[in-house]
Amino acid sequence: MNLMINLTYWAVLISLSSYFLATFLQNKIKSFIFNPLLFSTFTTIIFLIIFDIDYSTYNEKSSVINFLLTPATVCLAVPLYMQIK
Image (cartoon, rainbow, N blue to C red):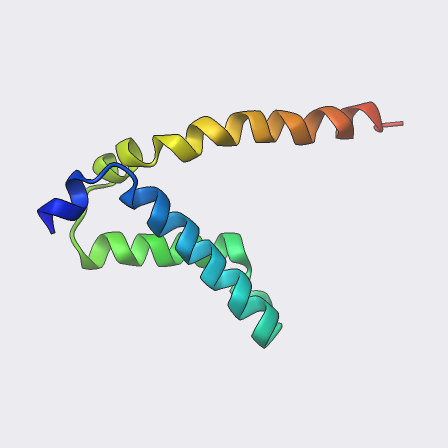
């Protein structure tokens, strides 16, 4: 377990795998319960609780996602703002 916590990208792997699992389930089952953002959030929280991993450790290791999320948000917001009329 300590080996996994010390790996750099384990948090990114957990986050992305839970998201892709949720999209797969949503496409198969067609239920609103398997909304990818909602389901992946709960899956990640449950994973952290089961394996007794601190959120600060997870947040530190998943900083790559936060780093990439900011430009993606701006890339989405600018075209939406240009079409506000």
